[in-house]
Length: 157
Image 1: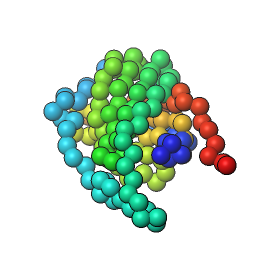
Image 2 (image 1 turned 30 degrees about the horizontal axis):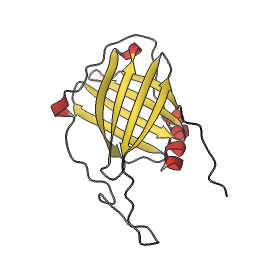
Image 3 (image 1 turned 120 degrees about the horizontal axis):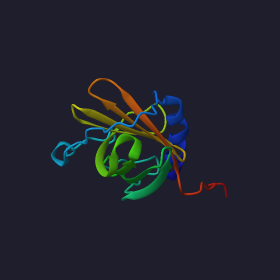
Image 4 (image 1 turned 135 degrees about the vertical axis):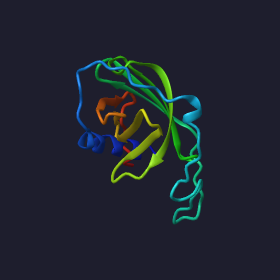
C-alpha cells in the first residue's frame, strides 16, 4: 500500500491543473453530502494470485502543502474511501473533514468528493506526493501541491 501511495504522488504532479495565488473561500460540503457507499472495482475484499484476501485497515498519512497547507489522510482501502482533514488558508479551509471515494486513476490513487454541486474535491497521490484540486461551480480549479512527511523506504531485501 505504501508503494502505491508513493507511486501516486509523482503522477499527481503531472496531472496538476492550474494553480492560483488568489485567496478564495471554497464552499465546504455538508456532512450529509459526504456520506455514501462506493463499490471498489474488486469489491470490498479481493483475492490475489496467492489466494489470500487482503484487509488493510486504516492507514494515516500526513502531508505538508504549499501556501501553509496541511492534509491528514486516513485511507481505508477495505472500504474504498479516505477521510481527509484539510487546512488550506489560501482556500479558506481550516481543519475541514472531507470524505472521499476512490475513483479510477491511470497512475497512483485518486479520491473524489463531488456530492456538493458548489465544489468538487479531488485528492490524487503518487509516491509521497499529493495534489488537492478543488473545482468550484463556475469551473475555476484551485490546486494545492503536498508532500508526505513520512520518509520513503526501500523494499529491497
